[in-house]
Image 1 (tube, rainbow, N blue to C red):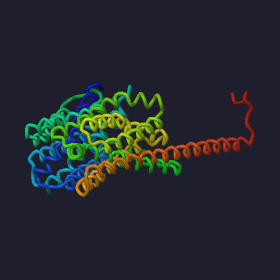
Image 2: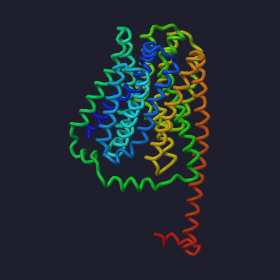
Image 3: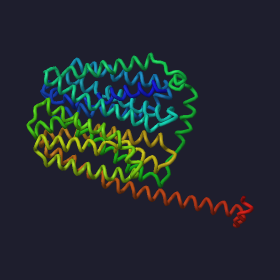
Image 4: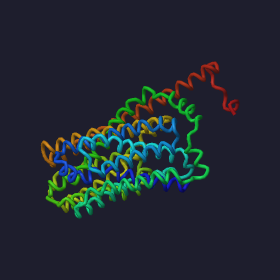
Amino acid sequence: MRKLIWLGCLSYLVIGMAHVVAGAVLIQVLDYYGLQYGDGGQWIMNQFLGFLFGVLAAPYMTRRVGRRNALLAALGALTAAEAAYSLLPPWEWMLTVAPVAGFGFGLTEAVLGAVIIEFVARRKAEAMTRLEVFFGLGALVMPGIAALLIDADVWQFAFPIVTGLAGITTLLWLTVSFGQTDDLLAYSPSSSAGAGVKRMARYSVATMPLLLIGTLYFAIYVGMEMSFSNYLPAIMKERTGMSEAAAASSLSIFWGMMVVGRLFSGRLAEWGGYFRYLLLSTAAGAAVMAFIALTGSGGFGLVWIGLDGLLWSGVFAIGLLYVNERIAGMTEKTTSLLIAAGGLGGALMPRLTGSLMEQYDAGFTLWMLVVASSMLIVLLGAMAASAKRIKRAEAVETRSAEVGRDAENGGLRRPKAARR
């Protein structure tokens, strides 16, 4: 099981790099093709549409071909797409390949997360946190590598680096044995029957508002995070006059503090409560985003960027825990829907952000992100109200069940002695 977790960590490192490589060299790619930010937004949007399809396809793929084969297909698709990027083909082909890359890292993330939750018997939270840390490390390391490559005027080598790591990871999944766990990862015809039972579960009327608000929360949050991280180098270059290499390194600061925050976010959320953690992180993150919009200094801007990464670091994971805690018995389905909503937001919002960067300026775009992050605070309030209604509905159902049992017993409760 230890080998499985560590190979999962390597896989998350690769998909973390794949998530941000486009944003890290976006300025150079657009200059190479002679395009505008709106075109870059379309490229990123296509990747996240593929990500959305990969997440939604994960349950079907694992039922049809097994978990290991699904991972091989996902990482193989990612390797092929990044190899195509490396060739710098015509722009139409870049847009065509983008959904394949997104499908690869979306399917990998969904399948691996389910594998760890289902098969790790002890310390599930620690294992999941380790995966998230390695995802953050990948998102942190890639912009730093890109900055060095940009400074050396060989930025196009960013794609072959991801290609090589994705290819190595694919080969490891193909050849490494995990002992008894191999049987759990292999295709099993009986898994289809179990999956059919799960599909019969339905959400109650009381839980639907929380589910809908939660999906909107995740769509806006992931869309905001992807817009901010993908366009951060371009924003810093325009706002502060930084060099391209220095602007790309600002992304490393953001993701570096994300990694640091994820080391402690779980403990803080357990100590203070999931909702309180989300509320404080979201409110403080929105405030810091406003400070970034108000600051034109490169030095102060980097400080606020680092603090923003720290504040937003645990929102995705703790948000998943909060919604699943309030909607009991639907963990797998709820988690898939929330991640898919995040993928949809990550596809659409960067497209809008690219258009705003093209038509207006970086300052206007930053204030749009401030508004989006402020909307998350309102949605959290609505989620809390919906959670209270679910609790009241459950209490009513419990009392109704007790009344029904009393009626079956002739309307009289048995004495305590008799019950004992």
